[in-house]
Amino acid sequence: MDYPVIAEKDGIKIKPEYMEKEKLYHCIFHDKVLLVYKDYQDFLNCYEIEEKELVDKIKVCSKNDEIEKIFKDYIERKNLKH
Image (tube, rainbow, N blue to C red; front, top):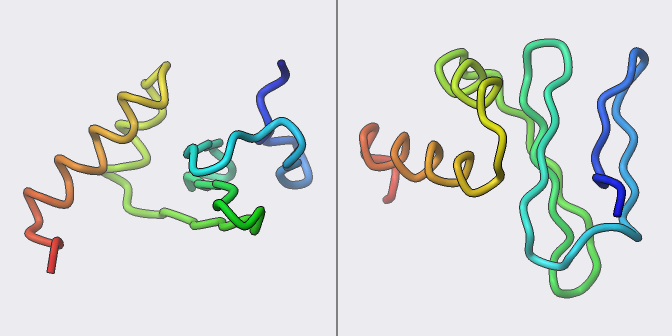
């Protein structure tokens, strides 16, 4: 299976037919992390992250599980749960 979110020279390409529902996918484009997921109603959701600390950590990750842990740690450290 191809990875459903690909960064290219002119933008990102999203292939929703390759996405699992409620699974987080990412790519890096112009020093930003783009997070994409398809919800249980098949709607695509996309978020752009520019926070340098997060972008730098995500750039060196190889697995989505690691990325989710980076977000959880960041949220807890910055006390963003509420």
